[in-house]
Length: 101
Image 1 (spheres, helix red, strand yellow):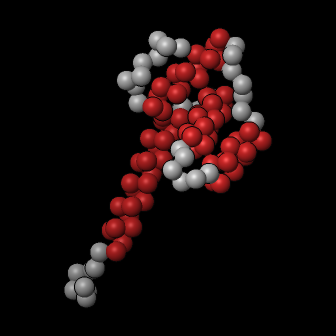
Image 2 (cartoon, rainbow, N blue to C red):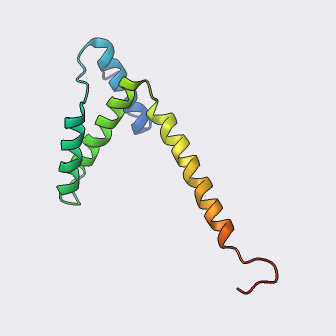
Image 3 (tube, one colour):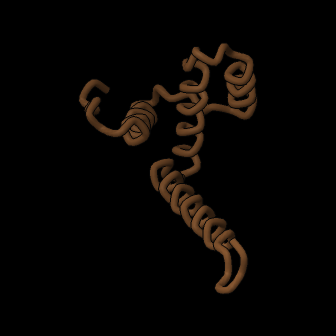
């Protein structure tokens, strides 16, 4: 596991760690209850305590790995979708020619 570089982007590093853990057999598949409890813990935690959110993010990456979904690719697609949505919103807010400001 230490062979997975700490210089990788965090999401990519998490995916590699999860993949190696799964290949070695020491992998606990997060179930819905674990995810739900982790989300509740994160929502109830002090805002300066990032551990709960970090664990939740890691559990989501674990679940996505089990489902064969690349968290990195999914997040990239969602980021692209967000940009498009923002650009559409920005475009629709521009005043039309001859219209008032």
